[in-house]
Structures are given as structure tokens and as C-alpha cells.
Length: 426
Image (cartoon, rainbow, N blue to C red):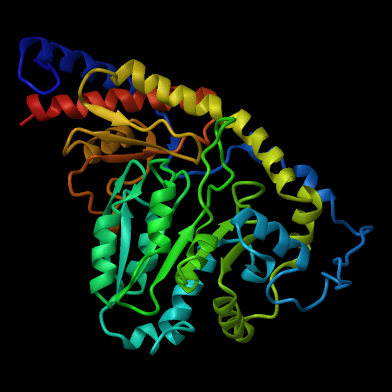
């Protein structure tokens, strides 16, 4: 018998005790925020020396002699293209280095597809009638927001332990030409921390699609964001796709937003040379170049991929204790109760919690009433529609340790209360 799911006298007494504890916390006037995956101040401090690498006394020229203070080089300075090629598993000629936001890069890429189509499109997407995107869920709310903004219908795809349900994906994209793409966070996925298996990546590379201009939006945001020494590895999708002649399906993205400074990092995109040349022609009308000084700053600070990896070990040293605290508290407070399950990721920025069916929204509401802000209910699903109202994304990175202890303890209390309310509150 489970006192959290069945009406018993013991459960009634527990509910009264927990409710009293909760009401006492509400009186404290907490104002804590664990709603988004932002780096904490300690992480931001790690990159401060980078601001001194390029200054008024520095050599402001790239290796090929271009003055980064002036116009030019639409697709990024050569050194930055080499650095991001290593990060993305591509070749420099397959990379465009952009501004400071991967989200902007992805939005603009969708917008270009809508207005112009891609190199393999019969016509612009906006002229194709109803458009659809596949959306592995739980997933990243900002991906879904882009689709919703452009009126692209979203089809949720179940996430499994090794990635999205490929059987369903293969069936849909092979039979429906209105399906133009899929969103993927392939390494330490948002929010579950899942890394796609080699088998899943290979099946993506082998996809046979009804739409000739189908695109895989491969948002590898957490490619070096390990929490453990032995972080996950993943196949390079672009290289894998070349084996099957599907490289034009692939658009890969990453940035230094959570490596250096959010809003002041550098973003990059990798694709086939065919796609890169096509996109550069469209971009040439829109802009002359991105911030080359910032690109040079990053390259001179990190030097190479090994420099980035060394830097990310410092991030891990800050983040791992926070994640351990969250998962340890979840186990201590909720383990064995049968009312929640959660992920223990090896990297990324989130812990994903599944409550009892119908309890996620109420849990988040209880936390908010007590002064703790979490990601909105349903945010990890297209249209904010979590079909079972179970998933909650926790973001342990921003709060200081002292605040995080308070936040996660209150969260566990609210999970318990939400479960008991199903039994004792009509």
C-alpha cells in the first residue's frame, strides 16, 4: 500500500504535517529562480581573462592578414572556422561562424527556408502549404517556439534512453513530404540529458525522406559540457551522412554561450559545402560580417579544441557538486516513494523529473506560491501540452549552493504535496 496514492489515515496525517511545513516556508518570502539553464557567477568568472587577450595593443589581424576591426569575411575568420570545425566534427569549409546566438542562427535558417527554400528545395517552404516538423519530447522549448512562430505544425516524438523513437521517425519522414525537418539536441539532451547512441545517429544518416529538402536541425549545444571525467561520446553526424549521400540533410549548430559568456559568445553552423555556399549567398544580402574581434578573442584564448576541453573541466568542477546535490536530495526525499523518477545526467544543464500523472503543473504552482520559480509546466512539449502532465525541467546551474539546497528541498516537498492532494483534496 502506498500512502501517497491511496487514502489511509497515515496518509491523511502525513498530508497535514507536510502542508503545515509548506505553509511555514511560504511565510519566509523566498524569491529564488531555477527556471532556465544559465551559468552561475563562478562559471562566468572562469572566462574573464579572455577579455584581455585582444586589446588596443594586440595584433588585430588574422593568420591570413585580415584586419578584424574592419568589414569582411562573411563566414568567419579562418582560425575560428578551424576551431569550430573541430568542435562540430566537420571541415573548415563546411562551417559558418556567426554572431553570439545559436538561437538566432537557427531562427534565421528556418526563415531562409520559408522565404527562399534551400539548395535542394523545389520552391520556398512558405509556398508548400502545410509544413510539419518532428519534435522529440520532452525537448527544448525555444525550438518549439520557432516552429509555432512560423506556423509549422509540430509532431511530438517519444524520447527513449538512446535518443528519439527512430521507428516512428523513419515511417513519418519516408511517407509525408510535408515533414520538412526535425529538432535534435543529440548530446546531453534538454531536459533529460540523453546522448544519442551510435545506432540512432547512423539511422539519422540513413534517413530516406519524402521531402527532398528535409533538414535535421542538430543543435549540439552541450557537445563539451561534461559533468564527469568519462563524458559521453557521439558519432559525427555530418561525416556519417556522407557515407549514405545524405549530407545535405544536416544542419549542425553549437556555440560558446555556456562556455564563455551567454550573449557574448560565438556561434557556428556546419553543413555540406553545397548547403554552406547556398546559405552564404542568402546571408550576403543580410550582413557583411559578424563580430570578428570576438571570434579572434575566443581563438586566441582557447587556441584549439584541447584548450576548450581543459576549460570545460573547470566548469564541471563547479557544476558537478550542484548536480550531485540535486540528484542526491531527490533520492533522499523521493526515492522509493513511487511518486517521481528523475535523470542522473553525465553532462548538460538539466535534471528531468517525472511526477505522478497529473502532478507536474500543481508541483510547479506550489513552488511558485512559496517563492521558487521553475520552468513553466508543459514547456518541454510542443504547444506546452504535456499529455500526462508529468515532466518538470530542473536547472541547477545558476543558483548558489546555499539557495540550491533550499530550492530542491522545497521542490521535493511540493512533489509530495501534489501527490497527496490527488487523494485528500477533492
